[in-house]
Length: 195
Image 1 (cartoon, rainbow, N blue to C red):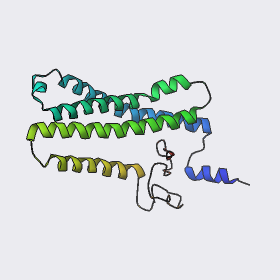
Image 2 (cartoon, rainbow, N blue to C red; image 1 turned 90 degrees about the horizontal axis):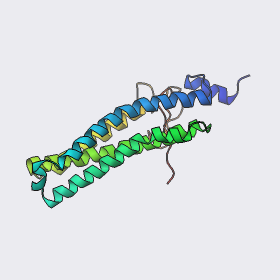
Image 3 (cartoon, rainbow, N blue to C red; image 1 turned 135 degrees about the vertical axis):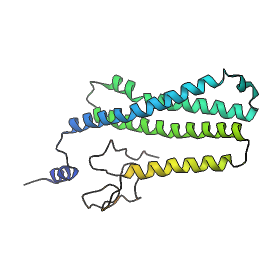
Image 4 (cartoon, rainbow, N blue to C red; image 1 turned 45 degrees about the vertical axis):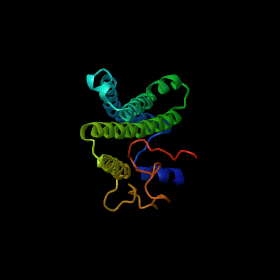
């Protein structure tokens, strides 16, 4: 006779132990982080060089403040996206890999949010300096909306006949797709953070 846990495991489509799941999720998370790390580090590197260009002295006080905010956001995003590696090193061997994966996934998500803020700020500064036009905030808001739309649609993995990526016919999460929505066989699943 099968238990409820075995039935739930069979629905997920994987027969793996908790340790195997944590190992798989860690590997998937590291692949995702590699993509984001490369982009944010290149962006941050370019941001650091701006201050040494002749045009930097011509920036208005407001534009200088936007630039400094962008650099700080880039530094924070870089730190958050790099954090899973030292976090793993510090906690390696303590038999808490599942929790390590969960916290690393949270830091990665925070890093992606900071990356969004960095991209928004950088785009806003570049368009302000290049055009001096009143449409810039509206254009930047549209680009941010595009990012949010892309992340919202991709996060759930919605497909025909599924609800929030659920393929087992189970109920959709209470608040629709959100961090923590089950996507069977998908990458590391973030749980809602308290607060």
